[in-house]
Length: 324
Length: 297
Picture 1 (tube, one colour):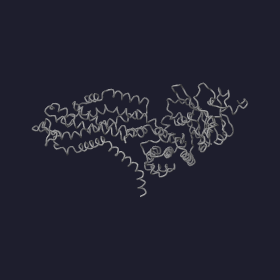
Picture 2: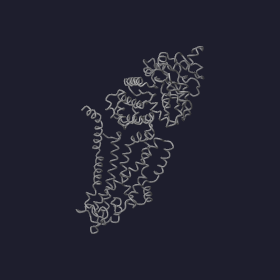
Picture 3: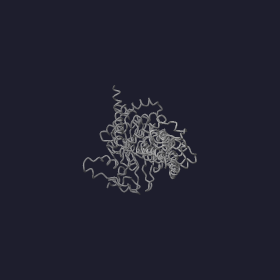
């Protein structure tokens, strides 16, 4: 399969008052053409940093890209200049942001906003762009497109707005879509609708998608493969089936069971703590229920479990050592 | 028919908002009063030469035998030292003052708003450069700066307008920059960047339209301030030159005759007073209508 999007040795951090903080440290990640890749991790894991870095939208400073490459169809995005990157944004990579409530400009009608994007990106006349805008609104399954066109964002519900935002993001014809928690701030039934829409559009447009979420069950519904991001590192990666059915990394196991179904589960959930400085080993050391001395000072490498399933954890591979 | 009803359905909320604005306007008596006064001023300004009882008195012609007559049935506001009808001249002065105010504020907006939006959106060195220049302008007392520039350019109404605009734009730059700095962090600006919108289009397509409300409020209050400043410059001899029937100039000339002709300075002065008051009240009212947080239902 052809690789659409690839990350090599990416290290991104932030220069802060308390010193330098590493936010992302990804050795290798590839997303194939046409697939939907789900990236799961708790808040603060670096998911949004990855999304912003992929479009060179990370504010620098305080952000620092230390090293590494992000390749889109073999071309490194990170060393493009501002003008070149603008040719990529929207036209090759598009992004859906977290919060549908604030992603639309409040002073223009949604029709105007879609039309403007189409006119700017596809060099067509206004009349034609209006026709296309109606098509886009129909495509995201909003009823009565002509009426929706004349509405202001505050007159639409959250789900409707997110559909409009998807329409805007898709109207430039990008081949790679980054969806950064597109269902955040939406209630559960609306989430399902948006998920279904993204799933259908992805099949229809044969788009490669990076779907970012903090909830494994969300991702498993529409993704082909999943990566688990923890403290900026990918700790487990594999097909949905492999990771969800047979999670190997203790963090993945806890993440999978993170939705409390009864009170006894609550005791097992370890709350995220502040990063302890000076730990060279596994980022999950402090919270890990299976930790061993080796984890403290050594960083586990990604190793094959089976098929396409990789995990970075000593527990899995050093069975020789006595457990607990 | 179906098309029409769909059109109506989508326009309905607009109509409702318009009705709400009108309702708020009516509830706010002072703003309503201000709006009526301004509407009258605009009508007077447009039709001044036609409604003035003595159009020839507006400029050159003199009438020495009727000099300094008190208000009466022939001359409503009395006459000046050259026997010209003050009523006609005050009416025509409306046109001059409104023109001055609108053009000056427009010029100041044209300089100030783009600079503020650029500074606030782009940040960094450009921001520093623009805002430090702005600070320099703001460190002079506004009237003093206008006087200095007007004196440098030479006394005429056009130069006075230029002088006021030059001393006025930094206020808009500051206002808009503040707005832009907070707007550029908003999600829709980030989203616009994410789909490859070039910076200039972000500034004028997203930032500026979202700063309009406070700018309108500030500008409508400034219309009054500019009229006041222009009158002050004319009063000091740096603005309109005789025989232009400018209010400030008329008050200035009338000082000599104040003891035996109170009407000469009172009526142009009242004209200035009511106009400035009306614009200030309108500004206050607009703020209330445009900003839901200060609305009192």
